[in-house]
Length: 168
Image (cartoon, rainbow, N blue to C red; front, side, top):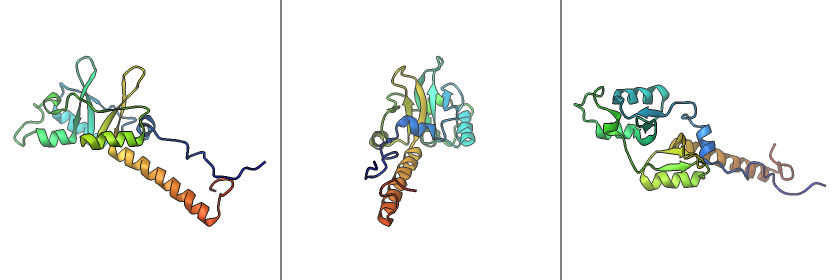
C-alpha cells in the first residue's frame, strides 16, 4: 500500500559537529602544534594546509590552547622575529571553547557567536580526547547545503514532482 507524504530520508538527518568535521579541511590535516615551536612553523602550517587555526599542545601532547591567524596578527609586533617567537607567546590558553561531537550546527554556531571566535575544537565525550577542529566556514557550508535541499524539495513539490515518492 502506498502512503501519501514526503520522503523523510534527508529531513531526519541532523548534522553534528563530528559530521561537519568529517567534511572539513581539518579532517585529514594534523591540526595540532607544540607550544614550543616557533611562530614561523605555525605560519607555515596555516599556509600549507590553508587553515586558520591550530590546536596547541604541551610537552605531554595534551591540548592546552589554540593558535589562530588572529592571534598572530594581534599579538606579534612587526619588529619581532617570528623564528624566535614561540607559539606559547601568542596562543590563546584556557578557557578553550569546544564542541562536543554530537553538538548541533546551531549549538556550535551559538558558541562561536557568543565568544566571537571562528574555530571550535571537537572533543569525544567518551574519552575526552580532541578529535578535530571545525571552522565557521564549515558550519556555513553545511547550513547552505541543508537550505538548498529544502529549497529543492519545496520547488519540486510546487512543480508537482515527488509529492508521493520524493524528489527525483
